[in-house]
Amino acid sequence: MHTLLDIIIPVYNEKDNIGPAIAGIDREIKTPHRVSIVYDFEEDDTLPAVRALQHSGVRLVKNKFSRGAGNAIKTGFEAAEADVVLVAMADLSDDFSKVDEMFAKVNQGYDLVCGSRYMAGGKQIGGPKLKTFLSRMAGLTLCWFAGMPVHDITNSFKMYTKKVLNAITIESTAGFELGMELVIKAVLKGYRVTEVPCVSSADRV
Image 1 (tube, rainbow, N blue to C red):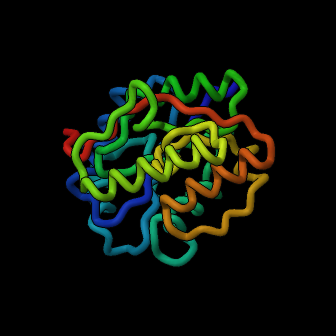
Image 2: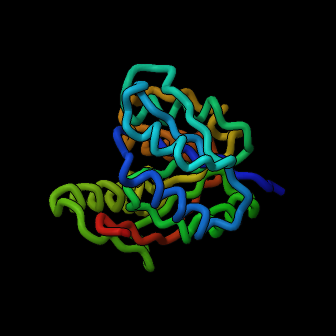
Image 3: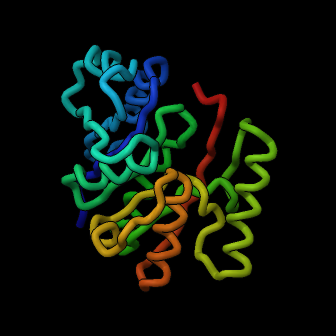
């Protein structure tokens, strides 16, 4: 039975969002958790905002690879100490109310749990229409025609066991590509992959 969750948040000048994001995590997630804020450079304006929080459950981790969200996520994976890891964004778009349900799926034996905007009960609110259309088509096409067990493969809001992360060599550098790669490789390796519906909002407060 897993009891602790590491949450990885890659950031790039998120001073206005990081406080509300941490507050949302504390408010919505009952699973014991720690948060790693992964940044690229010391001048990032997220850093003083995080330090001002004086939050014992939040730490700053510098990206050890080249800049970019994908490499920040990989750094977070390596820094994670818990057996279960969640990737979330600082822009307030992710549905933290679903994290406990995702964690329960892991404790039911799943190795990777995707937050899905495009399954029954899920929804995407706001955001660029073309980007949303392409994201939806990519997810549904892989689900219907390639047999992927998820409807929303492009969403970065995913939960992983360290077991599956340790078994896969990540080749992607972009954040959304990394999430897709991990799902596809996990399925091909026979790991259990599932999804829970979530509401992603570009206008979340």
